Amino acid sequence: MPQPTPHREPFGNTPDGRPVDLWRLESASGVSAEILTYGGVLHRLTVPDAAGRGASVVLSLPDVPAYAARSPYFGALVGRYANRIADGRFSIDGRAHRVPANDRGHALHGGPDGFHARLWQAEPAADRAAVRLSLLSPDGDMGFPGALSVSARYALDESGTLSVTFEAVTDRPTVVNLTNHAYFNLGGAGSGDVLGHLVEVDADHYLPVAPDAIPLGRPREVAGTPFDLTRARAIGEALAAEDQQLKNAGGFDHCWVLRPPARPGEPRRAARLADPASGRTLEVWTTEPGLQVYSANQLDGTLADADGHRHPPQGGVCLETQHLPDSPNRPEYPSTVLRPGERFTSRTEFRFTHLPSTRAEQGQ
Image (tube, rainbow, N blue to C red):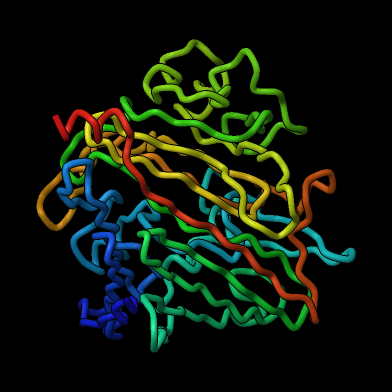
């Protein structure tokens, strides 16, 4: 059976009056996604629980003004450089560049006017549940060199897997690091925090950080630390450990260095998240070398969605597939330099299933 084609509807205006659209993707599995042209935001991602009841598993805000004024990157496409660049400074081929600092003296997620705050152009697929967003970032945009042409394709397949595929080309050497910044709560809107979620990350090393969130240097082994997520562990249990790294970041806000793929360029599993209460599970597959896990340490209950559900501390968890933070200044990390004639590509898949035990309990 063919997939339903995307549906478009208006979703208000940007602060300067430009219209914003919402694109809805649906699948026979019951999973659906709503994407905004403002910031490329994944506004809703509805997934059935083990009993078949649907709920959105990503944190959201009610409207465009809220996203523009106070969103902590909820669901946004972030770039030109996701994560941090120390002091907002880097060099390519001996030429220095500077990005405006917007986080403790460093550049975060491409600067204050990054891709999360842009109006993207949308082009739907004619025969499947997919929409392609595109953006032209001019030479010098937020201090980055080169005109960068970017696309992000959201696609939902029949099984309910949501994929995000990025492509980018440039006319001058630049740096590129793109990701989706969804905050996941598999319990659904209004279910509280994610401390009871079980998280597993397919990585044997992570990057320790200073109190300003800049990596201290080379990756460190996770063994014997709260960052050992090689087996499923409750988020709350890990965050309760006495550890200086957790104190530095106020919880998880660290990059795990993923195990290399069996075949270069093909997605491999990066993480698994499970909510025993609802039975929902999420596997994240990616082509990227790193996974930034952020435990929503700065949420304080003041933000709410369109239904009035407030987002408490640790109300979600981000699983951001990306290159490593501050790579432009770290030659020992995988390179993020993109040159003319090259094409940046990245693919991440969000695959949903249910816990077998919960499914069995529902059938009793």
